[in-house]
Picture: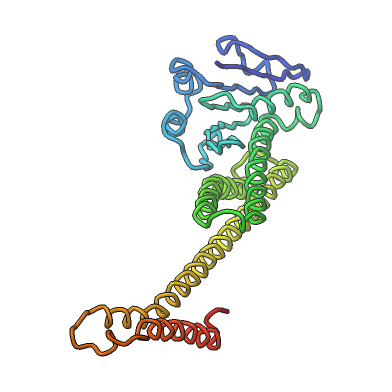
Length: 319
């Protein structure tokens, strides 16, 4: 589906104009949104708008890293939208010209719809009117970045909960959850960091068609991305600390188990030796014919076991 939004020189908002009926001289600027387009509609990027073939190729092929490419009369942005629940990434492409914004996304996105409605509602504002397509591009970027926060907040809540119940679950389950959270943080980081670098270029680039006032707004998005980056790095450090803590806890538990088994084995070693000697049943073993041989050996074995346990306790093996 292709939808259009245009602002006349009289500050009137016009929507859903067929592309073939658009005369650029009748409008101050316009926004054309390719919302989950068909193959025939996607072809208009080349046949109607005559965008650079490399930019069109980036739109139609695999997911690209967020970036900014400068062409003669426009800038091409590759942005990422993130589903807060699944962290699934969707690409949003923007072609920003002097009096034209073309957005392209293969799936319907709530963020673009919100920016679209906001522009329609506030298009009569002179600031919006004077900013033109740059204002639309800013709104799209702002909505996309705002949707990053719920995903990060969800992970932070899960980390706090995981830290609180650390002593109630097995180390294997805890480690699995920690590595799952680290994987989700890495997925977020692969989008947030390139988006941060992209907004840094927008704020500091001389090519982007924006004034100082516009760059203030883009700077606000850049600040949000800096905050997101710091939050993600802090969460990654926390997961690393939890991982190390669980590994240490697991090692301590293993050491305690091994110490217990070692004590038991050590106590029974001399008892096993005595039982082995008197279990050989040789004919000439004087103790076998002694009346008190059996109880004497039992007492000896008991005394040895108690003595070794007391000696281990004195050496601090049970602390």
